[in-house]
Structures are given as C-alpha cells and as structure tokens.
Image 1 (cartoon, rainbow, N blue to C red):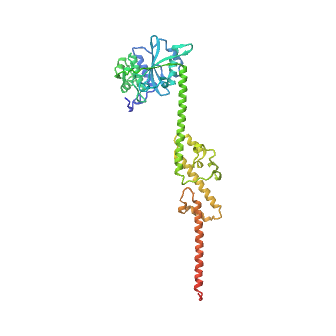
Image 2: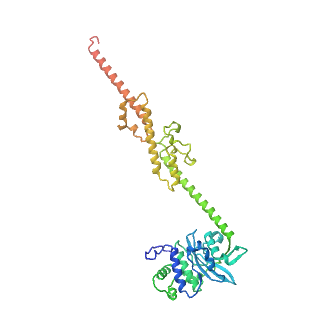
Image 3: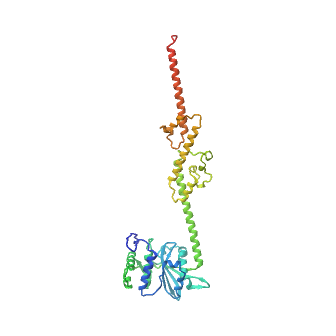
Length: 397
C-alpha cells in the first residue's frame, strides 16, 4: 500500500499526491451519478476565497467536503451530519489515528488552516450572539496513512463509503484500486454508479474501538492555535540559523587548525591593506582566519546554507600573495638589496618553497650571508696564493 513506485500515465503518476483539480473533477462526476443527494463537494480552492459558500449550506443539509490543510500539505474529509437534531461535524484524517494520537490532545494536532476553513463553511449553523461555534468529532478509528502522498486517494475511499451509508472505520483501502478507479472515472464517457462501486477499492477492517476526539471550534481556538504555530515557526527558524552558524564556525575552525602552522597573520594596524581589519567582524568569526576574510565574504557565509571551503581558500590565497608582496617590498627597501636579487624568485631554494612567504626574509638573509662568506673565502684564497708566491721567491725562507 505504501509503495511510491511511479507509473506514468495521462492522469499523473501513481505514488504522487493528487492535486486539487484532479479531486474536484472526480467529486463532480461521482456526485452527478450518486443516488444519495448530499450537499458539498465544493472546489477545494474556493473554500479559502469564496465567502458565499456559507449561503449554499442550509440548516439540516448533510455535507461532504474535502479540505486541504495548507500547513501540512494534506487532504482530509469532513462530513456534516445531525444527531438528535444537533449538527455534528465528523473529521476523517488518516494522519490523526489511534497510534499517532496516543498521549496527545486534539488541540495540539489540529492546524489553524483546518480550523479557519471549518468555521468559514459551517460557523453560521450554530451562531449565538454573534459567536460562531462548530462541534467537531475527530475519528481516530480509521485506516492509518503510513506515507506522504495517499491522502487524496483515501479521501476518495471515505467519500464512496459515506455515499453508501457505510462507516469508513470498517474499511481497509486498496490505494492501487482507488487509483485505477480514479483513472477510469476521469475518462470520457458515461460512468454509472453501479460501475463505480463495483471496483473492489476496500476490504473489511476490524474496528479497534478507539474513542474519537472532540473539540469545540471558535475564533478564540483559532487564534490560540495560530499563535502557537507562529511561535513554533520562529523557534524552528532560530534553530536552523543556529545550526547554520555552527556549521560555518566548524568549517572555519577546521581550516584554521589545518593552516595554523603554515599561516602567520600579522597585526591589522601594521598591514598595508585596511580591508583585512577585524574590528567589525562578528564574534563567532573571531579566529586566526578573520584577518584574511573581508566583510563581504563573511556576509556571503551567513547567507549560504552550506559554507564551502573554496571561498575561504580563495581569500587565504589572496592574502598570501599580498603578504608575499609586502615582505618582498620590505626587503627591497633595505640596504642589502641588490637588483640581481629579483632572480631569487626563480631559484629552487628550499627556504623559499614555503607558499606562505613566511621564510622569505630568512632566505634573503641567508643568501646575503652566503655571498658575503663566498667573497671573504675568495679574498682569503687570493691572499694565501700571493703569500705563497712571495715566500717561494725569497731565498731567505
């Protein structure tokens, strides 16, 4: 039943939730041939935008209607009946079943979207002193939905049971058969009621005896549920934001540990590049990599759900180049500078193999010492040779 295998066809794939228009067409064709005349079957979208629907529901009318829960992206079926002359609205929601409602209250699970549509449709039937109230019975003893797409097909099964005066709690729905029935009804031609109910869309289900949930809906309940949903959404967004910041910080900390021994940032006030300053950096970005990240780059990090490391690496490489040029400029300004030293960048000297440029000055100093030592050795060798020549030509020695 819970298979989500897609079988492509003209009416849509099996394993995907039906859309509003598909359910509207099916309900219209079934209502025209059903022997039991029941009010309702309004277009699902019109419930939210058409205020004249209340006038079409008269006191004493039985109503069957599919409602779309915008908060959960879910279809449910409501059935307005009368007990002892009093209106009673039964709600068949396959997600709110005996197992899912254990140790939970109905007010905590019903959404403001459903409450608003119920009050707009049926609030005028029991209106005292300008206060609309609807008494709702949520049926928990029902075939539960275990997937995220079969809610529309289950609404079709509930509607067919109600039109036959059968309790939906006694039905175990075959979603594949309901899908085939839906395809057949939407094909051109005549479809009799006998042909529709001849589809084996259900099998007998043993009732569990789960007690239904009752709730009196009014404007106060709607506002309370709506405020609770807003608070939950705010908490969800704050949690998502916190997780994003933690992920960014963990990436930067990992990169900082990897480059700690190779990268030695200098103080911002001594830098020739004020854009690298960290005075305005957020507190969660205060780590050794901050001097090499611009404010624009930090803002890009916060806007991305994932923080790829190549953005940081690009800024670090750029900072390395700037620091290298800064150190080379410093060497050029010293008294030891020689125009021939520009060849040092092309030499394969181990001291200059460091990409960070951290040992550049050491390399220049060592080369200068090596050249000075070489010159002194050459002068000493020349003096020694001259001394040897003078000694060999002196007969006294």
